[in-house]
Image 1 (cartoon, helix red, strand yellow):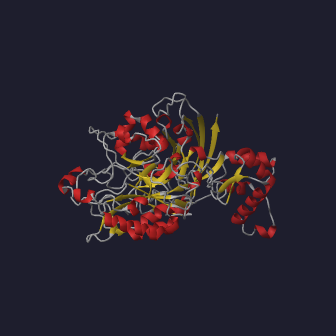
Image 2: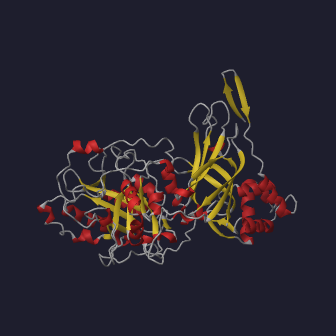
Image 3: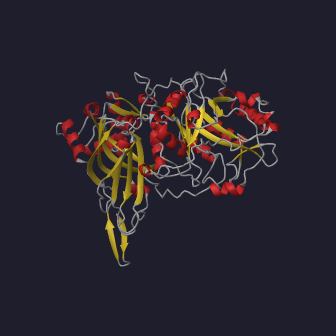
Amino acid sequence: MGSYRVCCCFTRRFKVTEADPPLDVKTAFNDYTDGAIHMTADQLLKFILENQNGNVSVNGNGVAVTKTDAERIVEQVLHKRHPITSLINRKTFTLEDFHHYLFSFEFNPPIGSQVHQDMNLPLTHYFIYTGHNSYLTGNQLSSPCSDVPIIKALERGVRVIELDLWPNSSKDNVHVLHGRTLTTPVELVKCLKSIKEHAFVASDYPVVITLEDHLTPDLQEKVAQMVHDTFGELLYIPESSDLKELPSPETLKGRILISTKPPKEYLEAEEDKSTKSQRVKYSSDDDVWGEEPSEATPYKDKNNKYESDESDHDNEDSEHYIKKADSCPAYKNLIAIHAGKPKGGLEEALKVEKDKVRRLSLAEQELEKAAERHQQQIIRFTQQNILRIYPKGTRVTSSNYKPLIGWLHGAQMIAFNMQGYGRSLWLMHGMFRANGGCGYVRKPDFLMQHGPNNEVFDPKAKLPVKKILKVKVYMGDGWHLDFKQTHFDAYSPPDFYTRVGIAGAAADEIMRKTRAIEDSWTPVWNEEFTFELTLPEIALLRIEVHEYDMSEKDDFAGQTCLPVSELRPGIRAVPLCDRKGYPYPSARLLMKFEFLP
């Protein structure tokens, strides 16, 4: 029973009650029990085989269900709901037990959690979970540098960690920091040790460390020694410096790779700080949830020069250090994925070199510009090489950009500020929930194929509808366990509504919403939505819950994002996450997913 004070004189009382099972749940129970009041394990098995795509969750994995699995589900659900059941030895479900089973993401999650894709293709065939400035704890200008965000990223399954290497003040050791800012440094060796300790906590598949170095040859040599001493046999060193194709994630299981430019001159000259500061403009395009990704304004830049996040001084001259450019073979030999900054424009940067694999980095605005004129050239490049996209420099608050543009052009590494926030980051989390959350998601075939005339996929082409997804939002529960009674409204229970939609190809993107249910911690909507998909392989189902507020901005009440290609048909329990993407203990939705031909 909850009490809400009104006008200091009156008290309104509301009881948090368990909502009745939806009609579809009642109908299913009645159909499979032939109208009886108990459901046996055999009847549950038949329901799962005929309505839930024949899959159950066993140890978090979606596997084909057997009678033994059905019996185990009944036993575990009853033990959880009725610990004393063992005394009476009941081994059947009531309607409420059946509803509890369906509404439990432990037993009935919306997607599986096992690696199921072919992991024996070259790395270029996969989207890879990638971080940007992975050492920053907050904003890009003044937040402390630490190994803690690196650890958090690895524990979430991120597979690409970025480190910026700079000399310390005495120039006898190496620090990790965001150069020419007020960020406080962290020692490189501390970051390396944390990477080693946490690299394979969430996934066995390889970790790539991208280095942006601003070091003298002697410090590069010191880095090479640190890397060898820290990682030992975990470090993957290719037999040849010019790989024709990259190894597969399966081959590289449990290994750590280094990706950076080959050693070049280090220039001590510093850019005029006043000129630098004039370039920095604060980005205010993110509110507490982040703007809608589909509403992001494309970056317009009249300057058509290729940009990179590599050192600003790479093309400057310094005879003293150029002579030392090849004096550190130990550092050069570390590099498994060669990065580079070709001179010239985008066309030159995107040239595919025969029998040579490399990594190219483009700023988000450069990708947008390239996508207008060179979309097929980008896709050809990513079929053989690695393309990394990183946030524009004005995102000083560590906000992020829309990742779908990169994915639709085959870019493997969409580098995100994992310490950031907002809807774009939710899309990133959603994409990498696929394939068991291992950090590698195989690119759709359409991005790797060639047509009869050697043509490749055209992201701008108008495509027919390939699949129709029906989504039914039944109800929600669990907020009263995760939030204080007055969190949403000081005077009454919350008024929840759900937003459901698609992120993906431009033609597929849409958001819909349910009506708001007044004064209920367990809202029941029973609303259905239909989504036509031209590229279901890359589509993400967006789900958000908000609390309607008549006088102020609506309150956030949870979100999640799920890869459409991984959705398990049937009635499913969908766990909700907070703004940072961490799951709430209890808040969840009961939904139904159905694919039409």
